[in-house]
Image 1 (tube, helix red, strand yellow):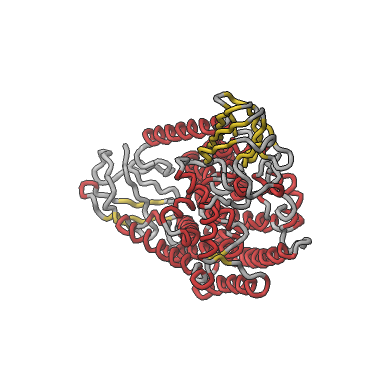
Image 2: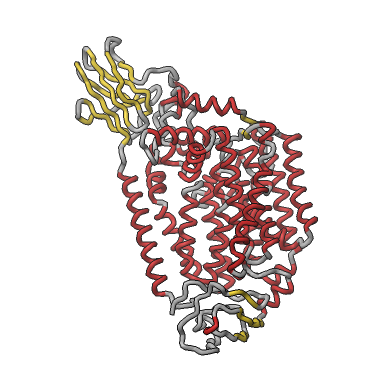
Length: 633
C-alpha cells in the first residue's frame, strides 16, 4: 500500500495528523506491528523504538494519535535536552518553521554588510576576476551565447578559455543578479544570498539534534562565522562562499546514507555534482571529507555498504558534471594550468604562520592563521565539553571530532607530505580553506556544549574581536566605490577589456608582450592591405582582407585549438606569432573573406552526452524506486 505523506511520531508523545492519508489496510482499530520495526504494516516506521503502544481510529481520521515511545535513544535525547528532528513537527507549523529561521539568518547576513554602507564594496583578492566574469557573461548573453566558454575581453581583448575551466555556478548566478539588479549592488546581493543559503542548509542539518530555537542559532552562527567574514572582506572568493552551503548538506546526506542506505544515493550524487559545478578547490575538500566520513561511519556500523554508496555517488556525481569536468580535464594541456599552484598559491606557502618573501602575502596569512587557531581551539574545546550531547549522539560526535582533527592537521606545515602525494589535493592551494568544514563543526559543537545564550554570544564575540583586531592591526580590507564599479562597466562597454588569469592563458601566449591598442586585424607583409571587419564577437569573427600579395594576418586573439579559421570557405591551418601567441592566418593575393569560429571540440560533446545520459538514468532509477516503494517505507 502507498501513502503520499507520512509523519513520524515525535518524542513529546503526539502530533496532529491533519495531512495524513490513512492506509486501506483492512484493519479496524489496531494494526499489528512487526517486532523488528523495519517495515511497519500501517506506515508508521519508528526505527529507534523498542516498545510502541499505538491506538489509531482510522475511521475517524484525521484525529490526534496518542502513543508512548520507550527507547534508549529517546531517553538519551531527553537527558541531553535535545529536541526531535524538524520533520517531526506538526504539519500545520511547517510554514512557520521555514520563515522564522529564514528571516533570522537573512537578517544576520544583512548585518555582515553594514560596513558596506560606509566604506563601499569589499575589494578582496578575487573581486575583479568574479565581477569581470559576470560582465563578460552578460555581454555574451546579449550576443545569444547562453553558456560562454571563451572570455573574449580577458587579456584586454586577446581572450582566454576562462569559462571552460572555472565552474559555472557562481558566474551564472552573479550574471543573473547583475542583469536583474543595479550593477553597484550585484555583488552585495550575491554575498547576502550566499550567506543566507549557507545558514539555511546549516539549520536543516542542526534540526536533526536541536530544538528549533537552537537550530536557528546554529544556522546564524554558521552563516556569519569568522571564516565567512574573512572571505567577504579580504578574499571576495564568491564561488567558495557559495560552496559553503554544500558542506552541511554533505554531512546530512552521509548521515542519511548510514540510516537509509541506497535511497540516499541520488541526492548525494547531485550534491557532489553541485560541488564540482560551484568551486573546484571546495569540490576537492568535499570529496576528501566524504571519503573520511564514509570510512568513519562504515567502521562504526561494521558495514561495507556505505563504502559502495560513497564510491557510487562519487562516480555518478562526476558523470552528472561531465559537461564541465571532461573539457576542463582534457583541455588543461592547452593552457598554463600549473600557474594555479605557482609561488604564493602553493600549499607550502600558505600553511598557518608560514613566512615568505612577500610581505603582503604574510600579512594576510597572519590573519588567516589567527582565525584558524581561534576556530581550532574553540572546536576541540567544545568537543571535549559537550559530554551529554556526546553520550546521546556518540557516532555523530566521533565523526565530527575526527573530521575536525583532520581539518586542523591539514592546515599545519607538518602535513606537507599529504598535500604532495594525495591526488590533486595541492590544487586546493590554501590549506586554511579547510576552515570551511571546521566552521560547520564549530557551529554544531558550540550549540551542543553551551546551553546558555550569553556563553554562545561570547564565543562568537571573541571571533568578531579577532576579525576587528586583524582589520586594525594587520591588514584593513580594500574597498571599491560606485566609481570603481562603473569603471569596470566602461572597460567592457568600450572594449578595453581586463587582465586575464595566468592559469587559463593559452600555452603559447605571452600577455606581457601584447599591444593593448592593437587593431583587431593587421597584415604583416604590407601596409596597403584593406581590411574591413564586419563582425567581431566573442564566439565568431568575420572580416574581409584585400591584399596585393600573399600575406599573413595577425589577429587580436590568442591562438587556441578550439578556434577554426576559414578563408573563402576553405579551412586553413593557423599559426602563432612567437612573441605574443596571437593567431596568424595565411591569405592569398586579392580579396579574402575570413571567418574565425570558436568550435565545439569533441571533449565538450562527449562531456555533454555523459551528463545527459547520467541524468536520464538517475531520473529513471528514482521514478522506478518510488513506484516500487511499499507504503510507509
